[in-house]
Length: 364
Image (tube, rainbow, N blue to C red; front, side):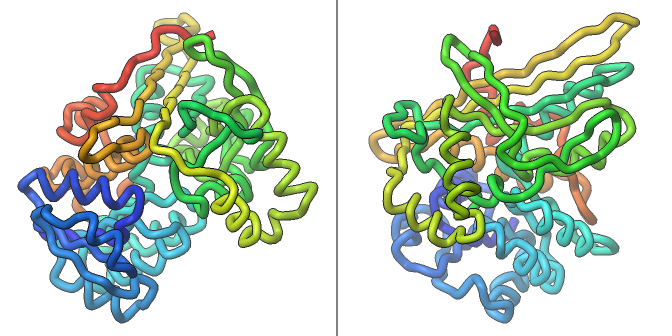
């Protein structure tokens, strides 16, 4: 399968290594800079330096390809998807942006190729899990998703280190969040809905952030009383982000905030990803609850250390592409994450990264 991967950044590097070494993909990796591409030397793939924000360049890159994997910033998603449709190649991405996903869904109408956005961790794997749990109830009452990509050793006041895209992080903190309340789709404010819980003896907080639900609100509208998604952080993080974004008005000057965070908050490869989904409702006339909880840790390989967010995000999109290649997913039109059967995802050679994680036995 001929695949072009756009973006050789933090996540793109891991995607490239997984696909290139699998033996089933003829991979070309494209980036605007040569430095990240040089890190892929020695792998069985081709590289190209090109302006990935130029429509004509994108179209030329995608012609003759079977699929494109878009690992570029979220604000380029619609542009890449548009050129993918023009080139006649299948489209996969990692975007958490709600507006971009709606635009891609519109592009997919009547297309002869598949468009599958939101293939990462959240949105992505979290939606696959939630949909799987939800289907086991005769009457679904609540479906709650909580995900955190956290430093293993927080040391600053924000209790946070950069583990993924700053653009994506700020985007999910600043936009309204989809939810279902009392059976009706609605929007709730980012950074609101604060709650606390403990996991393996560690205290966490969770609050509304945008994009993590993917298309689940549309899929489950009218069939569930409460549906929501929240990001997990260490206690105190949300209060400081509200100070920066709302009281200091940096929500309206996101460029400055991103510069501050890149300059002052260290990145880390020593992270942990928490996945926590609860579903409750009626089964056999009884009110029951099902829980899916995982912790995924970074890999400290001397040759290629890989963070937990790299592992989980790359596993999500590589498994989606792999299942598509095997004909296990729809081959045209808009493909939702919840169309991926959880057992098939976990059995996949890439999706098995979530099987190898540690299952959490108790939630307090």
